[in-house]
Length: 208
Image 1 (cartoon, rainbow, N blue to C red):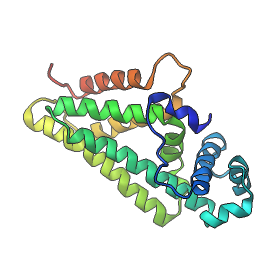
Image 2 (cartoon, rainbow, N blue to C red):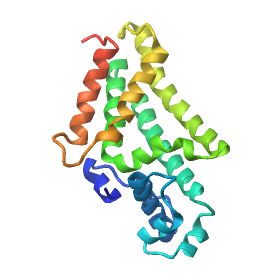
Image 3 (cartoon, rainbow, N blue to C red):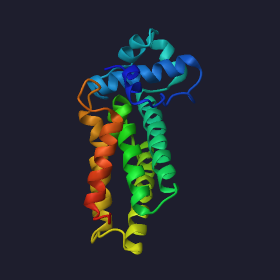
Image 4 (tube, helix red, strand yellow):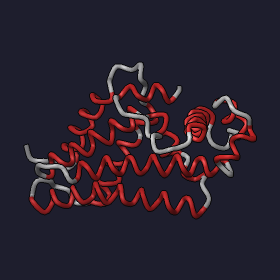
């Protein structure tokens, strides 16, 4: 599955900030290779070949294969965090904001499912320093959703005995979309997002 197909959800490719063009091409090629073969089974030669470049050319832009994964992970997590924070700051009550957060987060994981698979499931391939940076971003994702749920509990709009556990369950539910979503399937990213938003509101006991 090529990353070009990830635009099915109407989401732009997340690599516009990567320059020059050769570095961006290598990043896109790495996403495709990591998603298809896994990080450990992918070689720098595989990545360079997909980008139409020589292996030596790769090292001009990235010192190691891990540096590529780290940059992919960082940009992907930053994009996902921006989606959640935007929803958390949106107008409306806790139910509206939670629904928008889930809808947007799921839509991103479906529309960018190839990227999201790499971002979400190759974390353990990173070294300690890079991994710690990504874990920090994940905690910020968690905090964005947890804050909405806490607001809902405080206002009486949600009935959630275990806010922390419920937050983890919601994020896990959304992230898993990247694992199974198929652009040729029966639902669009928007439709999956709407379905999951409804399921999550039921999960937190949102008042109608």
